[in-house]
Length: 308
Image (cartoon, rainbow, N blue to C red; front, side):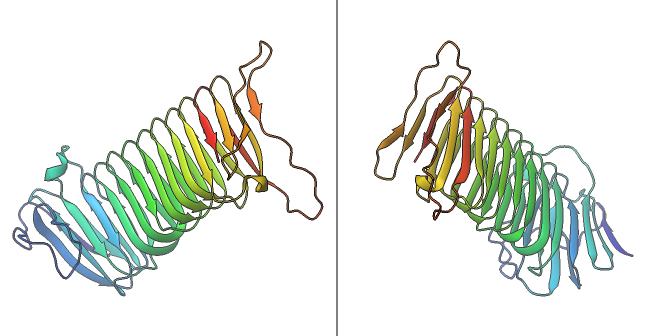
């Protein structure tokens, strides 16, 4: 076991006065450089960043480089056990974002990561793995160019996924969820946060309590589902609507479906006294040579729904 612990009495370097050109992080970290170490042969990294921000950049070669910036009283532990590297920050009083330190790690693209960032942000770029797990608190979670099965959670920070592939399970209590240019089955749950997606492909399962759902350029390969209590639903498909088996309903909201030429295929009809929901959509015509339609369902209690 190789362990490093830095306390108030040990400082490896003085205050950083300019961005690290060699690291290429492009952002001035806060505080002193507390730890700088390089390790070979790392295959897995477990991080408990506490209130510090965390960033991992893959594709930097076989060496894993760790740099920790913060105030002199930070307690940061970097420990190695075989191919596992553990980074842990001891708890301390909550600091404003401008005073938080940062953990910067660069290393190979093929790496297994588990990250917990209770108070700071978490960012991962250019990684290929079987699975990537990130637990965030109030800070933002950012995933860029990652090939992995993603499991992401944030209590109040926004979650952003860009240019990634693999099944994605995303949960946010109140933060927004943003997914762009991604390929893989998506399962998203939010409380009051909004869901915004652009150019995504795969199966889809999105549910919010009060947040709006906006999806532009979705290509369904399997089933799709969008559900909200009081938020708005707006979905623009990248495929023809006749490839889908639409089943959309609402309790008191409105529904509008347009074909690609702007024609209205369905509209809202007020509820009758015996109705408990409104349904729009027709069964597709049977054609033995035509591929089976992909099922897609939408439901809202009071929100407006728009499909095209």
